[in-house]
View 1 (tube, rainbow, N blue to C red):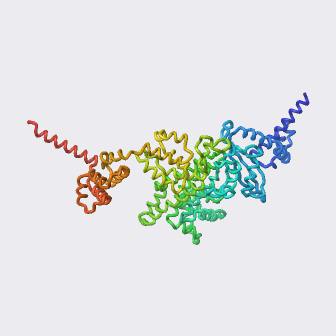
View 2 (cartoon, rainbow, N blue to C red):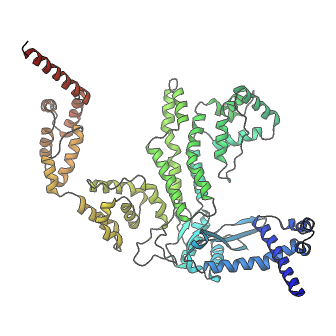
View 3 (tube, rainbow, N blue to C red):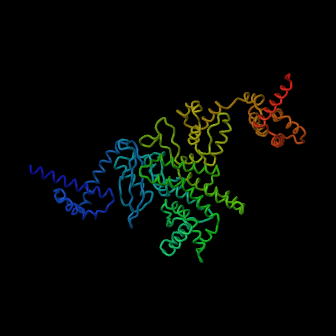
Length: 603
């Protein structure tokens, strides 16, 4: 009995020591802390036999981690990964003096563990960071652990070594070498989206006439270690009844630091302006910045624009984000920027300042409004061209397309399709050929492939249109998918020449259109029905009001487009009969009729 008690005590002591080591590693504490932890436990728990026998200094803790906990965790992880269907691998170098450490992380989905899992597979020092060295390192690790056939995605930062540049061309990057090693041309390549978003913001900043990075750093450095200057600013804040806040620093390698720094300047803008312009010898850059009445406008504009990226960068830096979420974040950013550009969006604060300046400086205000677009165009282009991802929804466990599934679009096309998708309207069933003309003009600069064009068109079809092409979607041809889909949609929805001529002759009216708009619609119908220009002209004139016909008949210029311009002007000068005018006329007629009836009645 005594030997069993001693054995149980020894097991409890070992379990306690292993738990202490695990707790230290999990919370990123130093092993040096364990030198005093064991003696501390003995003092806190003097009656505990387990605490009395625990001896877990830093040397012993390191041995427990390397020889017990580490191998045990690796064994459990490999058992778990052996049951999953596919995974992605990530790596990046970390310099520790002259040593370059390369951790290899794997990410996979395990519903039994609650979703996405991220595990450290290996950590080694490499002699250099060439594409050949890194790809061989990853390939060897995955092969040794029987995981190579599960690899469908590679994630790293956006260097040429990892991806071969923005176009991801060539055969000497880590990404291209892994695709070759796995014989999977459809492997998804995921760059650092936070880095892409940060670069997009800086592309926008470079388009501004002020150097925002320099302004932020100069303001911070001016007050950072100078008590007298800080106290002077506090005094200005007190006079203006604004709460004092310290200036924030910014570093280009800290992607989330610029937005709060700009926000802090805006919160303190009036005190800062008063302070710097009151100095006898202020820094010339800061003096020019605060003397420019449009500087605050630029900061508010940039602040509003950066808010789109700030939340996305935070989300991208979470531990369990998936590639699908990354693609979704890219899509939302590009769509939001494009929507702002299309709507000529202007933040409310900027609108207030411009309204205040517009009376005295109208020309400069107009120039500012025209230049506002410059902040969005370069950022949208940067986000779209660098965010190149594939669609892995049809991947099988080894990363190649499933048999019978649509071919996965090339990686270079993935994000480019997202950038143009927001500018393509839903399919026009009443004007299918015109819709395809606009569609092809929109995607022409991106030089999209057949698969990408096919998927873009499918994404713009409603339920009824999808039913008409369901057989093509389920079983697309090997080649010319887009052309086959286009021809089917034109066959179903485009009216025959006979039907178009029938509409041209008998169904079109002016209604609320301008005469020129009616003429263009009639020309469109006549194009396929092969009606002559003279026929279209005569049919068009018969649908115009009599006053307009009279003016056109007296015109010496009988060219139909010129007649349409004249008809538009005549219609603009004609008094329209509004609903209010018609109601007033009816009421007057009723009053007149009632008066006549009253006179006609016998007394």
